[in-house]
Amino acid sequence: MTIDQIRDQILRGVAGAATREALEEVRVTSLGRKGTVTELMKEIGALPADERRERGAALNRLKGEIEAAIAAAAKRLEGEALAARLRTERVDVTLPVKADPDGRIHPVSQTIAEVVAIFGEMGFSVVEGPHIEDDFHNFTALNIPPEHPARQEHDTFYLAGADAHGARKLLRTHTSPVQIRALQKTKPPLRLIVPGRTFRNDHDATHSPMFHQVEGLVVDRATHMGHLKGCLIEFCRAFFDIEQLPVRFRPSYFPFTEPSAEVDIGCSREGGGLRIGAGADWLEILGCGMVHPKVLANCGVDPDLYQGFAFGMGIERIAMLKYGIPDLRTFYDSDLRWLRHYGFLPLDVPSLVTGPAR
Ligand code: 2NL
Image (cartoon, rainbow, N blue to C red; front, side):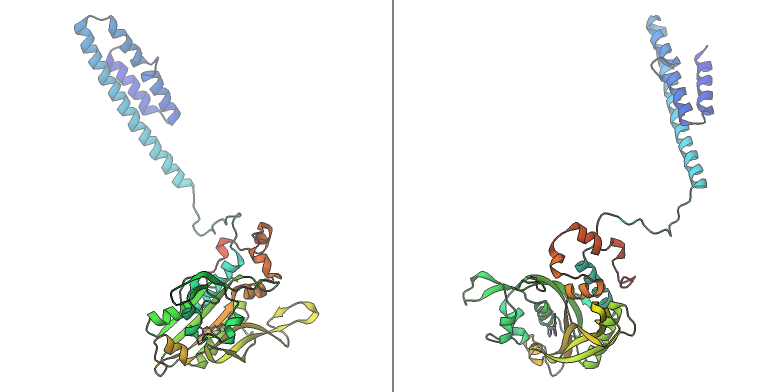
């Protein structure tokens, strides 16, 4: 056979290959170790020098042509295979994502996300701040001067080592210092919530030395008690997902608000179990009040121009009530069986788009 005849035969084989396997077969039988072209290459060694060069060049050209034809055919087969898959396969982009079965969201994280989602819809932004604070931001600015009895109740953790004035840093006992910093830095109007860790030297069945709070602060020219009540009633009903949940405001005292109130929601304790939203009993959920004028002044905000309200709640407490978790101490045990039972799948975390988890 002449080189031209061999070329025709091999290229017909390449063109006729309907699968990748068939194409590979053509490659092996032409260019493989014992392939037609390879065998012809081996034979040129026996030719006289002048013929050898010409024959070698012709076979090399042939090899190149075959390689190019095979590459083109492979590309064509690939395109055909893709087109066939696109014809037969369908992707339903509306199907829900498969939840990762391993990880769980801790109830504290879930509850913070829910609170943030609710206030986020009301136009609050989230602010965070340092865990280590100074006396001014944690106490004095909040109208809790040195020797005020409230300081004893806070069971403060102080850091070792005093500064030149004898002042020691402390672990914040509430998230209020973050709001103090925001008030100092930002001219009202402002509307913010501060979730985060807080620390008190108190450890028993219902107290942990580290726990979480969310506090909120709204300051504007004419923010009044009606705004406070509407906002917090709406929050309680959204958080516990009960439209007509009874909510009451009971007079109370905080050094940093005046007037101050505790917010209770309706519940029943009949038969030993707690049922939220029904019955004749009341359950304390959070504390609140109109920001004390002295607190505004301490932050450089003129209390004759501005007023506002603030509130605070314990995250573990409202998580225990909403999700029926009986023991505070189990929150920090890192027990995976507990987390599998009380934890949440990542996709159940509320967002500002989906709203609180139902
Ligand atoms: C509670 C009660 C409360 C505040 C926190 C606050 C913050 C600033 C000014 C005024 Cl910067 N008030 N926070 C007000 C009332 C109550 O928390 O029971 N927390 C667990």
